[in-house]
Length: 138
Image 1: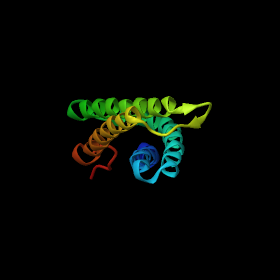
Image 2: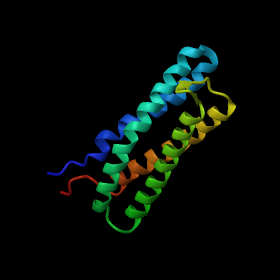
Image 3: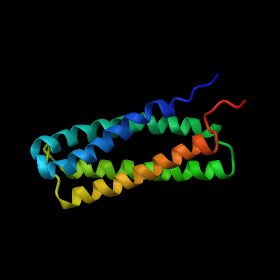
């Protein structure tokens, strides 16, 4: 029985990025403690995204042609967009490797990246539950 690696490790960047967005918005009320957490979560999320994307590319060969492959390409596009936006968000708010508090542009990047992450996650679920990708055929 084959067990795909991509679904097992993709939870790390998804969780880190989601919590980073929550921490950035929480910093509007909670202050510095929240946005400092956000920076660390963004670093871990971006670092863990690399192996998640690599394993996703390796699993792509098991996706059947047609609707499932179209959803796979849409999933990849959404997740690459999220990765690019979260990485941009991280790099724009660093000064001499020290995090800066989020400003309006950072919060807009957070929101856009989270929307891309949500769309990509939904498409990933559709691949598994709708098209049966990665599931054992009975």
